[in-house]
Length: 127
Image (cartoon, rainbow, N blue to C red):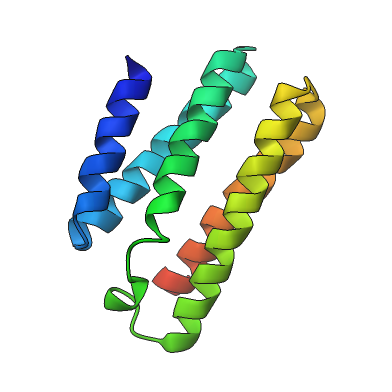
């Protein structure tokens, strides 16, 4: 059921390229982060995997949305694209560690994903 909801959310979000898209995508990323963290805290591989999947789907939206619409500085646009690529790689690495049962290594990868989020927010929001 959760996968169906995630898929519907992804489809709905991908269909729109507006400020709503960014807000909805950020919400999906936050939900995925929260579910992944909950999975680590409660030893639930299912929650971790579903959280990763939600983040992967949400992060993929940025390959279809022109972020220059929301970010006016060209150098910031390129940096956010780089962060998006890094996040894709870090999420894939996180998933591999979870699939292999390397939970301690996976927590380090989860930290990299959180760092990707904070790095993007720092640039886009000017922290």
